[in-house]
Length: 251
Ligand SMILES: [Mg+2]
Image (cartoon, rainbow, N blue to C red; front, side, top):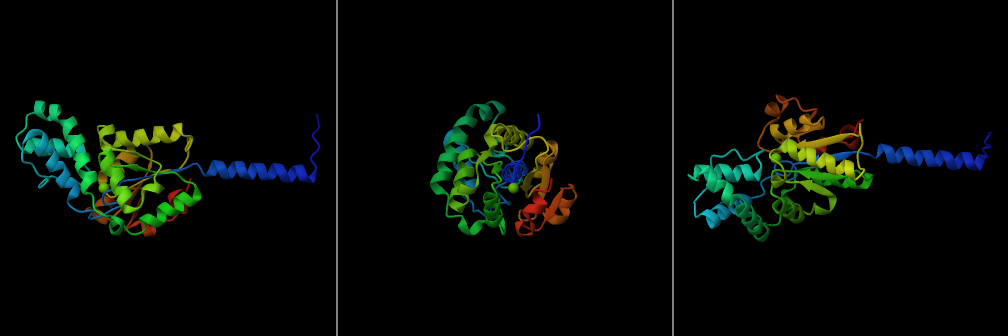
């Protein structure tokens, strides 16, 4: 059967296919680490909440001093603090749920205003992504309520659709996996869609690469550009001001 196309119907179908391809090309995802990436020098409140929780639940005095907390998940930091304070493996396992609960409760009460702690270019990049309709999410070693509280107090909460947090997986690669599954389920990405993970630590680069996600390293944390370069990120920038959506989401 021959289908007659009037100029009006051609126009309509061209419009429809342009719309469809715009929708298809909009499928993308950008994941953000928090500490050293979206925020820097957020203060001692997070560390203090972890110490307070260990003290409250176990009576042990502990500290994050001497622990390379950058790039670590909160539960691993807590386990190391407990071990350093002399706790047995059994005590650590038994007390962890209560410590995690108390640390979050403490942090949401004590978190300061973080609007001045947002890394250069981060707010603008999140704004541009939201205008373009590209979903942004968190992949962070922070416990859930700590991470969301930081975003709220930094004025970034409304840009972020979802997050994968410390207590949801054993390591950062596990968190990336959770984020990807979630985004696929929501229909935000499909096979071949550009997905980027922006982070300030070699652990972020490793976690991205473990899942074929574009690893974008920013030197706004404790790790310098030279050291980050050694882990071969797909992109390395001094800070997010140097990131354009075109480069970030290049198919
Ligand atoms: Mg970080």
